[in-house]
Each structure stands twice: as C-alpha cells, then as structure tokens.
Length: 515
Ligand SMILES: [Zn+2]
Image (tube, rainbow, N blue to C red; front, side, top):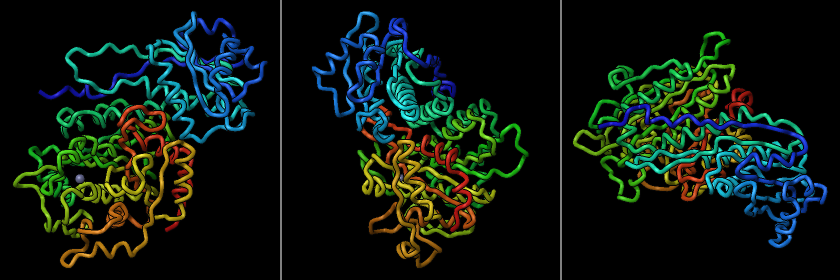
C-alpha cells in the first residue's frame, strides 16, 4: 500500500514568535521553559545586571572560563528548566562576530542544548551587541531553533511523542528584528529536508507528482506534467533513456510556474531546475551496496528547487518563476539503457552513453533544454551530480559552475553571507576534449580521468542557451553525517537558503552578467 500524499508533506509548524525589545524584565524569565542568554565576550557588570540570575551566571562563566571563544554552558534554574549561556565575540567589544557559517553552527549547538528537555517555550535574550550584529545573531538562532525543532519523517508503528517548541520570545534587542524572510527560509529548508528523507517506495514518482500538485494548490502555481508520452513527442531522448528501465511509466518532467498577483503575465525571468532521481541503482552499471544504500536522496536537487519556490512564494516576490523537476528512477532490467547507446536529446544533440550511473546529466539535459526554450534570463539548477565534487570539496561545501565566470566571486560571497558555503570550478572549453565522441556529438561522460564534476557541467552547458546566465550547483553538501551549520540531520537541505539569497540579493547582477 502506498502512503497517502498528505502524509508525504510535513505537518505545518506552528511556532509563535513574540518580541519585546528593550531592557529585559525580570518576569520574562518565568514566562519561558528555557532561557538562552547571548552576551559579548567579557560582558560588563552593567550588562550582567540586566540578565536574570546574572550574578549566578557570572560565577559560572568565571569558573568555566567562558571567555575568548564562543562557548556556552547550561544551568538548572528554578523558574525554567535551564539557562543556556553563550559569550560570543572575537573582539570582546561585541561588534565582531564569527562568520555566518560559524554563527549558524554555534546557534545549532545552543539550540540542541535548549531543546534537550523539550521546552514548549524558549526565550532568547541578546544583550550588548550593536544592531547589525544582534540582528545576525537572532536570525541565526531562529534558523537553528526551526531546524532543530523540525521532526523528520518516521514510520514507526508507535510514534515517539513529539513535544515541539511552540513559542519563541526574543528579548533584550535594541529594536524589533524583521524575521519574515528568515522564517520563510526555515520552512523551505525543512521542506527540502523532509522530501529528501522520504523512503523511495513512499515518495515514488507517482506520489511525488501528487505532492507537487498539492504544493501547487497551496501556493497557487500553474502545473504542467510532461509525462513520458509528451516527452516522446518533445524528442526528450536523454531523459527517456534513463526512464526506460523503470517498472512503471510514472516518470516525467514537472513544470511549475509561480505568477505574482500584480505582475503582468509574461515569461519568467528565472528558472529553477532540479534533479529528481527517486532512487539511483546506478542502472546497468550497478552501484555496490554502500554506494547505493542512501540513493533515495538522489532527488535532493528537485527538493531544493521546489522548496526554494515555496520560500519565494511565501515571500510573494514580484516576478514570475518557472521550476522544472526531472523525476525518474534509475533502474536495472532488460529495458534499461546501457553503455554505447546513442540517444538524441530534445535540442537535437546526439549523446553517446558511457556510464549509466551518470544518469543525472541525462535527465537534466532535456530538462535544461525545455527550461531554456522559455528564454529565461537566469537558470539555476541543483543536482547531487558527481562523486568527484565531493572528493574535491568534501561534504562541507557544494560546488558551483557557471557559464558567466565573472560571477564566481559573487557566488562565493553569497555563500559566505548566508552560511551555505560554495566553491566555483573552472569551465574552460578545453575540458570538452575529454567528451569527444567518434560516433555522436558528445560523450555523456569521460570513461576515464578526473574532474567529472567539471565535465558534467561542460556537458550540461550544451543544453542551456548562450544568452541565459546559468548557475549549476553540484550538491556535494546535500548529505553530511552529523549535519551541517545549524542543521542537525544528515540530510542538510543545502541550497534552499543559498538560492534564496542569490535570488533576493543578487538577481540583478546575475541577469546582467555577460558570457
Ligand atoms: Zn547515478
């Protein structure tokens, strides 16, 4: 029996956020089950006096030498289950903080500590920082608490009792902190984590389509599903080569369209594209056990793309967006595609198949070609594409490759600012030498040699119009044992916040960049 689509979407979080800027009042301590106090390094006595139980905490920090480094401690308190204290700063003046990634990581450990006893309410007290920095600290804490508070899908017959955080008080800040975007990002990121974690027999292609239909209803997107029949008509032979090994005919390319209420109908300037391999066996060139074990996460790229669309829809951004998701399994069987097959993609390019486990670039080739036909100014695609990107960067960073090399420093900076770190790779033409085929237009991948993440991007570039700015994210940080930044689970949702920042803060520059 398959799960009903409703169980395939996460329960809607109900976190109330209350803010009381200005000098904290004593009674705020008793209002919450847990208090998180964040102060600059070596706080002045006047600051301690504003903190509930400040005198006890002074002794504790001295005893545990909580100076110099970001650090936190925990104490039992009669009024609430505990206090988590963090003395945060590099300079001791309260005006310098660690970078965004470090800050999010620290916020993650504070959140883990605060949520240990399942409090239903938490107060964050941020005192003694300049407005810019207190803003950054609060945003990081909200992201971290939302990530830690989120229950990932489980299928236990007797579910463990969840006692999620319901109320968050923010106190002690110099002003109200604007959190609309941060809360939308936190929800989007959690949705990406949830979808990626779903078992491959629950989130099969048919159910994925239903789930996307439900999201489309919720966010008022137009939906078009290009099923295998339609893709045959479109000549999408690269995508269909991967799908032909499937047991069912449920594969296809999902096209979602966000149209802002007030904007004139017209072409979307931006397209998001995602690799949605429901399960990747490697195909005819079968993966070994360990390499295949977690291949239900090979649809993370599509989860990131659709979760980014959710985030931007929640924020009601003023321009249209197309989102294209390549949804199929990659299976073995007598119909599955194989090495040396020649297939023709929808833009007429003939591809010589080399390795069936390089299915992601096959499925994406036609999806990018379809997205490109709408002539967007910018395409951003997300894919768990290559092992070589993980080998190059580890799972702490994701790779970015673009047809606009002038954007590389902007791409790095965007990651530094939002805390999802990326590193660019070269896209020089001579990398194509390894993709020369004797019998077709291009090899799917090189049979030997390193740099597969670069060659994959060089291959994909053939399916993107030259006039379109294209950013390809190879999601080497999609999964990481122990989590990453503020996210505690192996499935990180990496990419949602990166893309949201890129689009909200830098789209103008992306659209303008020249080849
Ligand atoms: Zn593969």
